[in-house]
Length: 245
Image 1 (cartoon, rainbow, N blue to C red):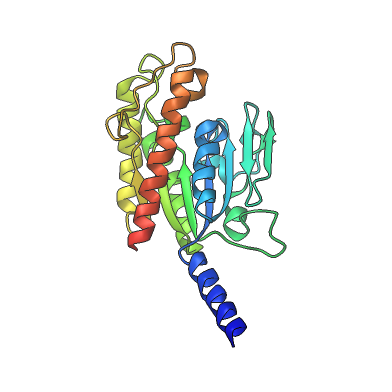
Image 2 (image 1 turned 90 degrees about the vertical axis):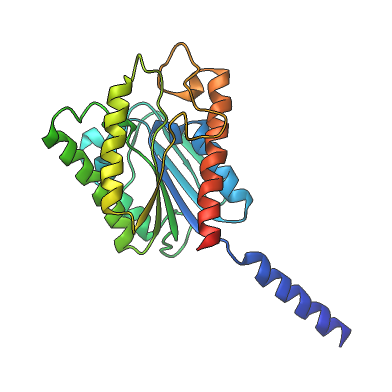
């Protein structure tokens, strides 16, 4: 009898330990291909979630739906899987978002969709918003990505990009980018939660500290520290929201 009771308690504890754990897909551009992506993958994995992360340098929402050659990154690809297997390459085709919504990692022997997707895109749309027609076109690609997640019944979070150096990414352009993202999110707010990464939104500040690159936080030591702060902030915001739902 004692053995049976011990086994029962072990079973109950094991079931409870798995409660609240999610299958989480993380996709993004060069920020996700660098330390931000590595760290946010680690944060969610440490909680016991099954996490698959894909970062494609230079990508924007449209590239995650395209089979064209231009959707191949030549500046860095990163992916990490639930087993913590990591793949890095300089050149690789941007993954298909539609395919990832059906099977988040090739490590699963049967198609396994995510329950949550965290999308970190938008930075590479900043120079494609000059006219209202371009603004509307870029907004439509953001909406398309959110609606793909909605149609797959996947809980969506969209992470806006950090500002970068205003000499490289002028404030007025960054403001317009956030206007576009906010407009897209206002149309899809019931499907996706928008998280701003602008300097005044992340605790401790996200002002760009690197003197050389102007865009990527991994280009200097202080930038990597801020990327770690950013990853922690997004992880906490997403986790808190999921916990409350």
